[in-house]
Amino acid sequence: MDYTIFLAGLHPDDRDRTHQVVLQAFDPQGSGEYDIEYRTVGLEDGVERWVAAKGKAFFNPAGEVIRFIGTVLDITEKKRAEAEREQLLQREQAARTEAERANRIKDEFLAVLSHELRSPLNPILGWTKLMQLGRLDAAKTAEALATIERNAKLQTELIDDLLDVAKILRGKLSLNMTAVNLSAAVEAAIDTVSTAAVAKSIALHAVLPNVGQVFGNMARLQQIVWNLLSNAIKFTPYGGRVDIQLQQVGIEAQITVKDTGKGIHSDFLPHIFESFQQEDASITRKYGGLGLGLAIVRQLVEAHGGTIAANSPGEGLGATFIVQLPLLNITPEIQPLNEYPQQELDLTGIRVLAIDDEPDARELLTALLTEYGADVLTVASASEVLVNLAAFQPSVLVSDIAMPEIDGYTLIQQVRALPPTQGGQIPAIALTAYAREDDRQRAISSGFQHHITKPLEPERLVQAVVTLTRNKLDARL
Image (cartoon, rainbow, N blue to C red; front, side, top):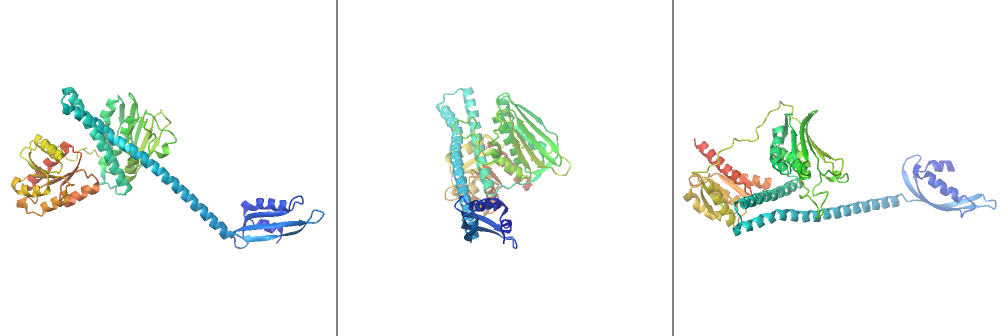
């Protein structure tokens, strides 16, 4: 083998470096020693190998090389082991960095969660105390009640966001999909946020042609648009403008929400749809929230087979969110927002047996249902239900779920085991703070006809009672 063939067998990336080391060894002004590691590529088999070469050149008095001796070792396995160790180290370092980042985000999130859940309680408890002292006139009492309601709803929204994220993380987010008119869903979301826009003198400009239908869940589609509009209104100053446009782009429907608000920093844009991410998580931040809304929106959009993107020219220059959803290839229809016609909320002549182990909850149920004309009996335990069922002969049973000794699921199963003459077929509503989809399904499979979550929306409960009693009457006819 001559030197030319030797060079041809070296890895291209190592050829020049190895050649320079050999030339230095041949320099009579130097020590003649060489020590190098390089890669070879087999001229016949093409296999790459690592080599450690070490040796020395010997010169005659004229400075010419007369001998060149040394060792050549195959260190391929050693290099492979070193590479594997390096990769393992890098993976461990990356995992450690990610774990530290996750812990930091978790700590920041818990701090924000505590703040966001406690903040609505402050006006709720404060105004409640003032009302108990009896020192508020009619105007201040009305203001207090409005503030309490607003903050209670805010806290409910935060809890709903947490439940949605829990479903997403467990892969349990399931949607009942039907053909939905998209313009109707967008209009419903706009109605929900219009009051907030008016309060900040924000112009809400909508362009909503009837582009057709998508395969989706009406409530979740409204939630997508509601979240985007709520964010736009939150981050837009007084007197600003929010535009929402619905249009058809090819075979897709496109929803564009654009605001004149604070904008998004370019460094944060890649993370804007991640859970628990906020551009400002400091205690001096101006805007509240848990950093969950946009993460939920992305998951809901993707669950509908769509995409979502965000862009912003920069801080103070507003932001634009674009949602694209596949359209159904059918003739567009206008769907009514309400699945059923609104029934008159009058419970006169209806007997309701309600069970809850919390005294405050029983008082609320008694006052609420009596206000709408019902004849109400509230009890504190499942055993009292079974004792009073035949004697009271209720039209509807309203039951809590989490109770000591006998829970709501067990109670309704015991009721359903009774003969019809003893109340075994009584319509029943589960009224509970267990608000997951799994909880709803368990309640229905146990024997309840309706599942209503706490905190209670009075009209929703009354509507359910009206519906159940009318359904029972229709069945008899």
